[in-house]
Amino acid sequence: MVMSSEPTGPAKPAKGPASGKPKAVVHDLEIKDAQIIFHSVWNELEQDLGDDMLRFPKEIILLGGAPGSGKGTHTRFIQKTRGLTCPSIVVSSLLTSPEARKVIDAGYMVGDREVVGILFRKLLDPDYRDGAILDGFPRTEVQVECLKLLVDKMKELRARFFETPLRVHFRQPTIHIMVLFVDEKTSVERQIKRGHQAEAHNQEVRTTGVGECVELRPTDLDPKAARRRYQVFKEQTWEALQSLKQTFFYHFVNAQGSVAEVERNILNELRYQSLLELDPQTYDSLRNLPLASEIILHARQDLVKRLDAYELNQTELFHQVIGLIQEKIMPVVVRHAISGLATVNIEDPLLHDSEALAMLIDIFSERGYHAVVDLHRIEIPEQVDLASGDISCRQKKVFRITIRFQGSEIRRG
Image (cartoon, rainbow, N blue to C red; front, side, top):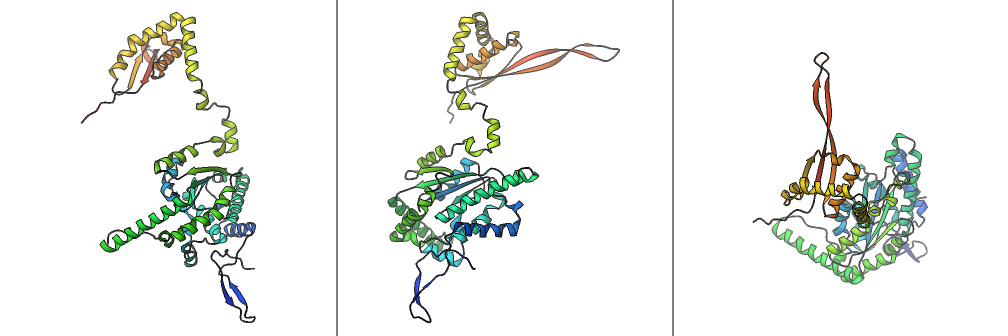
């Protein structure tokens, strides 16, 4: 049985040689069964590479959106936010066959078998081991199911190699679905604007001979074709992406506004969440440590309680610490008002008391400073045994106190 991709443009009727009745001319045989497509692609990969080399990215961000929603514009910002350095994988750019280009230029989509096969091989590129952004996948229900099957296989491989030296290559996959949304009016306007800009740029290149022409989609010059592209997205891709809500981490981003507004929306959606990204075993090991957000929740109220308790219950020690700060630390801090950073070395025995150290840090915090105290132990030679050559030392404790605060902004010019 020969299997190939689905037809994506309208079929043209033709006369059958015997009956004379219209006969559909099908350029690609459609496959609706995701299982058949996936296992066909997967078997090819196993045969070509071996299962120990099927090392897919740890993190996959599926970037979807209507034409003109800004996927290309915001990809670099998403890469920076997630710490990814490799270029995004633009699925439409992978489909470079003449047949695929003809379908794309008509405003339709190429078949699922071709998309899945080419994309899976691209994801195995070692450059994408830490993470990859996919622009334009999945776009159909079949591709959605193939994605789910891929993630299942990634988890199977992880379990298979977990007790081997190869387990570092088969990590817990993290899948993000990010949808940039714009309405039809905005989509069409942006497509046409993009087309006019590309047309003007290419004309200037042809006139001056400077630079290189950019790709000009025929649909970017035809409002009717631009609307059809949006409608295809709504009818096929939108539903496919929505179906992933219950399976993967889903982000809906309003992309109607300015670049800065959309970036803020993206940043808010892609905040790090350890439960979603860490391996479950790693998360269980860390979960008992408090989050920074948890310990700062009542930090101000706790600070007030401690300071009042110092004044009421440890009055003498508290005022000794205040006096130490006034006499030995603040004069140095004041001289560093421009830089906002001062370091003071103190040997005062008062600080040998851990309660005094805690008070010092709290006092600076209440006054708007950030104080860090390091204890340095220095060996000071005191006596030398001339017979044996042994040197007796005493230990000198030096407290290094670093004070940070907002320095003065001086305008120079």
